Image (cartoon, one colour):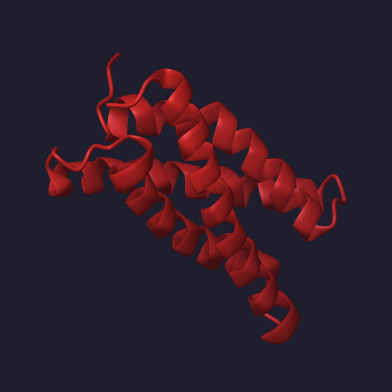
Length: 130
């Protein structure tokens, strides 16, 4: 198992990669396919969540020895909460605080990623307790 410091940095590097895919999907669906930014945000978040789960399990937390099904259920629950937090924050920031949708997505991603996702992934999803 990784130390807190190692898993923190590795999971955030994995998050950057997953976020890159998330943003790419979001921007493509808004700018090329002209989907509503909220739907595009949801689609990007789903792709990012899948990539991040795989990176967390096999690289950041090295938790591949644990049961895949149980981890994926816990990750799914956490991803749904993260999805709702991210999508809701993007909507609130864009609609009520008049952020441009990409800036709203950046702010929401940072707040949810640092404030919610890391702790849930380390202790709840992948069961790292030291």
